[in-house]
Image 1 (cartoon, rainbow, N blue to C red):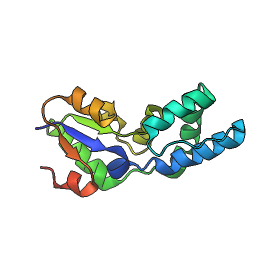
Image 2: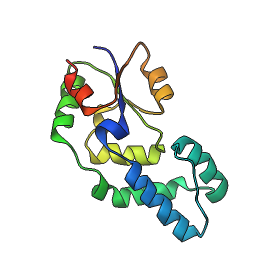
Image 3: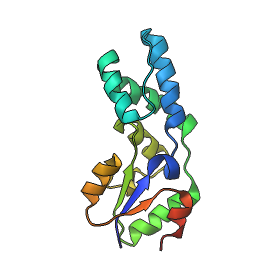
Image 4: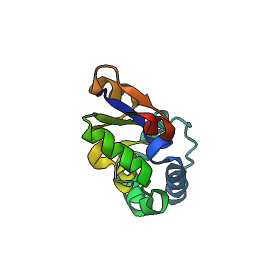
Length: 144
């Protein structure tokens, strides 16, 4: 079976709301204006400059608030389980920081089924071959 590159935010867990909540909280706590780009990879560079070591703060916030934002979807979980049992290697791509992606995957019950997490380019490179891009739950459900 071909490897799969699954869009975290569109298929498994939308991390955007928790990201925005964290940005608000971080700006309030640090009293630093955090006008960051929408692209979270670019935003990380801005946060590195303005906040320094912000990733542990995000990890703690995400761990604390994750249960409010992320819930397992039984149909999605069943599809991932079926595909993994069929031998598919599953990668998950996102522009979210790894700390946030890891929390989201754990809360939706997908962490143990995923072999690689990163940006789309990183996941494609790590999976090798010609992975199937999965950009929606219906894409996931249609895979045989």
